[in-house]
Length: 600
Image (cartoon, rainbow, N blue to C red):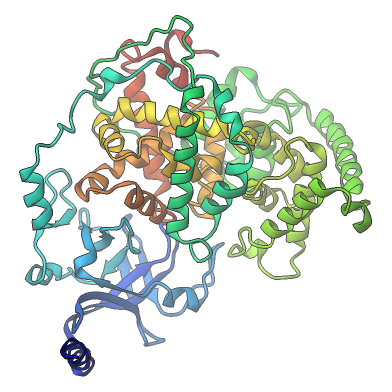
């Protein structure tokens, strides 16, 4: 009785104690995405409540709120409550309100505090929670005064990264000092084998539909539909299933030997500069009079595309060649004749599936299942992009037609969730069903193994990624191994759909055309992964993230990665490794296509 009375009294006192705003800073804007031009004006507050102290941010209530802010490149942008009309991707006011948050300071693990460089840009912070969640970056009109947080929590600047401010957990530190910890800088490479994974992928063949039916849909769903916990559960289930198959794995080396690699001293990474996109004029300078590309200059052209991407108005022509729809050696007349023939072939295959009646579908279960999945995916693919907006949008019908026709073209593979992510940018650029289809066929020739039932190729890439991280950043690799995260499954979505969910629509177009060049190595996609992980090492280690927190943190990077910085870092890592090719294991040289393993 007395306990109930005490609880009631406590709850009552909490209900009548008003919230107290200790600090309120107006002029704090949230950026919707890294390449977005939309900054949402608002205010950040520190609020004392009966249940704790909270950091809160909310959009401004003033519809006319606006101010001018300098970006990192020195350009001036207007922060306004009124959404701009320019740009491919537009966001509704409802999406602004979803940015609002209220965070208990006891859940805060760290925050990035970025100061303007050389007078350009404005100060910004990004809050990171103990569970790995990262909030949207906040940009301050004036220098932020967040040191007041030190009244409630202990702050300490990271010894490894100047801009990273850590929240000190005194209990955890005391425990850590009382336990004899393993040296995280130990030589993990001494346990590094030459090809520990290329082993009897037959062992994975028993995991047939599990990845397609459960893991892929879970990881590709939006956060509103699938919780972080479900994604984590899917990753853990996949790990468990892999461990169950462990006894089936054999070493690929017939002699049963492996290569022992000592700690590598890598040279400094070179400074890399990105270039401007290839224009129509530059592209035409590589052409011969009949429309073919000069074979002696083809490598130079591909390097130009790799270093700068392609101007948007040139993509319709250039993507056909990069994806093999048009051969580099085909004349204009030869391609036009082929294009007419392939358009007729597309219409023939399209008519095949369109002629299947509902009655036939009832006895054609595999076709009906694939058709239902296509319809489900098309209805939710890139719907924030104006090209695909609207319920009666003919572009959605065209996307549906392309994917269903591919089911008839490659019935063995059919359709797997995620394929629509690859098709939509092609349709956006080509604006023609037949051209889109044959470009999609070329793209699927490169990526179809990502969607095969046994998922052996995805697992192979995860292991190759782990191998590269071991060489490039052994400290991070060792940390991931000690926290049961070295299977790299938190990068699954990156590799599955080539970062389609991590970058904006237009940045994805640029990234893909860079990757399609095959320069400077066939595994450059994995170096992009390495570059991102390398940039997040301090956040992951200093915050002591485990598998759950790493997955959440990686997911929260979506739409907040700077493509040019990532590509620059990935290329620098390639040149860093290439300069050490005489020291690298043979399979690493094979990934990078360098040394004796290199092929033209």
